[in-house]
Amino acid sequence: MAHSLAGNPNSLHSIDPKIFDNAEVRLARVELAACFRMAARLGMEEGICNHFSAVVPGSDEYFLVNPFGLAFDEIKASDLIICDFDGNVVQGDRAPEITAYYIHARVHKNLPRARVAFHTHMPYATSLAMVEGPPLQWAGQTSLKFYGRTAVDDFNGLALDALEGDRIARAIGDADVVFMRNHGVMVVGATIANAWNDLYYLERACEVQVLAESTGRQLNRIAPELAQATYAQMRSGGSESAIQHLESVKRRLLRTDPDYPL
Image (tube, rainbow, N blue to C red):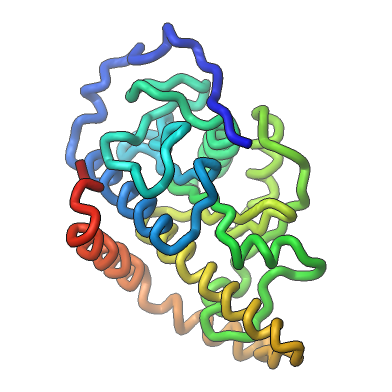
């Protein structure tokens, strides 16, 4: 299913890679690697076909992304490559997966607020993207974290060119979560911690919805006014919960996957 982007090999390392050797970029690498490892542990990836990316700190022209061919559970911080928006790998010796490039490059370029973009085929969210009607119902407390923050994009085949990436960016619009019909989901955010937090809780919200619907009984939906009020309560704490969530992931991984920051 997946294959790599055919780039220009003469473009590799065409800029001085030392510009990326600083504490902020190092931290972004470690945090992304932690997200890959925990996503794998939780069954949120599919083969080598899913991808996480983050715009390089201090830059608007380059982004970190996983290289083609590595499963989430083997990715280390040093494995991540840096690409520009023209398809060039400017740091790293591997190419990105082709749809990873065309989706993530165009989303980052067209949506400057989307400093981080996580795309997966995680099973419960993807299953809800495959059925008729709104994917996420406002019937569980966890779902209300996403109240008013979702969009739906109709399936249009594989993202094998910039036009398709641009179309996906337009479909995201002002949303933070897009259910990609018959495909998967994408979460965008301002920070790696925020994107991870949303990805995790999105799959949990979808999981309990699928379980509830599997009983054959009607969902007990929450009234819009209460849903909106609860969402506001959830947002009142800012990003602290997301930050602490990612810190806990990093601590857990140091006990079980001590190579991930390497």
